[in-house]
Length: 115
Length: 112
Image 1 (tube, chains in turn red, brown):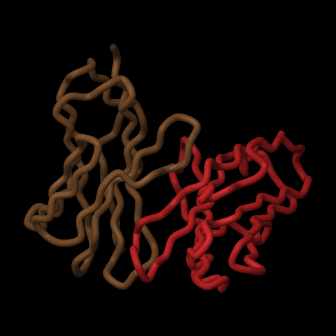
Image 2 (cartoon, each protein chain N blue to C red):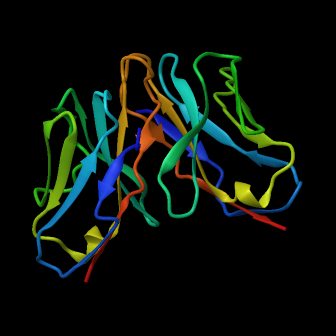
C-alpha cells in the first residue's frame, strides 16, 4: 500500500485566495483525521470522519475552514478565504478504528504558506 | 478533560547516550498510551504503544512502561544514534474512543 497520500506537498498562496488540500487514505481504513501543526500551537486536531461521516469538527478554527469526505478514498480540506495565520503544515491521517484504535497512519503533510 | 504533558525540548545528546523523555497524562478510566515519532519533513509514525497498566511497549530499541500509579509513560532508549534525531509525541486514547490526545512534542537532537 502506498500509505496516506496528500497533495499538494507545498502550497504558496496570497491572502484571500481559496486553498484546497487533498487526502487519499489507506484503502480499507474507516477513520480519517485532519491535523494542523505549527510551532506556536503544536499539533491540533481539526476534524475527523468515521465511515465518511464527520464526527467531531470542534477543532475547526472558524467558518473559513470546511472539510468533506465524499467517499472512502478521498477527503478535502478547504480554506476560503485564506489568511496568513493559516500558514502551517496540514496532515491527514487514517486508521482502522475498530481493529486498532489509536494507530494512525499519517501522510507527509502539506506545507501551506499564505502571504 | 484529558491531557498529556511532556518535557519540553530540545534535548541534545551525544551518540550512544541514554535518552529519557518524560510523559505524564490525565484521563479518566483506562486509556491506551502511545509514542509517535516525527522525522524531519515527514508525518508522525507510531513508535510503540501500551494498552493496560504495567504493559511495556518496545520498538527500535525504545521502551516505555505504562505506570498507572504515577500516570506516566516515559520513553527510554539505552544508546541513541544520530538517526534518532526527531520530535517525539506522547499520546493517549480512551477506551472505545477514536480521538488521540497528543502532548506538545519533544525535539531530540543527537550529535555525532
